[in-house]
Length: 396
Image (cartoon, rainbow, N blue to C red):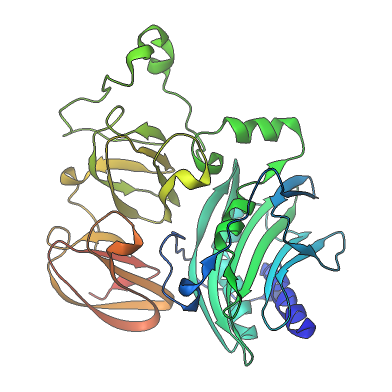
């Protein structure tokens, strides 16, 4: 088992090589960790022991992390730390790694993500990138990568986040074999969202940020609200939006549904890598997140009164005011509005993702079907459903 753990550890280190690994492939992005395809992990009990009173605090290259006390430290060095939750016949490993970054920014890293994927494909008997894209940890722009893979000995699920600081590439990775006793995904998410700088300036910026894990980049309070402090006491009862939604749009920021924007369905568009987060309250805790998604081109979301919607690098429009979505690009589309019901041929150069859902809630229960695929695939959709394509497109 030690040899197996070592091989996985070395594999994760390959992700830091990037440009040195060679190969040039087109950029791609898959997002939303809330909707994985089904696997054996779905039948396990979630390990949920992240507790501020008992967590162990780690300091790694100027950043602090909190991890549950059940993780056992392995043999480490200054640039690589490994921790184990299960050993023996199963593998559950948490790894922190730091190396010299071959790129200057996380955007450049994202542009070369397919080189990382190729390294993983070469090392496993079978490998599928389930989700990847941009995410924020505190005020830190990061890239996440979720994958399923298989060797001759076992199947594993992997989760990784990467960010760049001071010309260093830092990664935080979880590897879990399918024969593990528990699922460790919830605790892993809380670990990566616990990141904070060891200097006071970063700690303050993380604590002051709006939304889960400080994920709002430019969500300063609007000037008109700041100037109207004297009238803000009744904001809980007073709506700030007009009843006429024909020309409304909502850019980067955090909005209380029913106060700042009306409940309903919205199309969110981006020209880069957009992010949205829907929460049940404004505590900023991981538990308050209803759904979040990193996306390219566009996505569609339904929100209800009392919820909180955070938008980054994107703009939201009332759904009934949008009729210009390009159905021959990746994105999320309304069947019967953006495209007719029927059968469609879709194509992905590598690791495409398709999802048909019954509504725009982004909840797992609304998924009618989803699949990761390569090459061509046929899918049939009906009026009222939603078709999501990532790293794939309808063949004209």
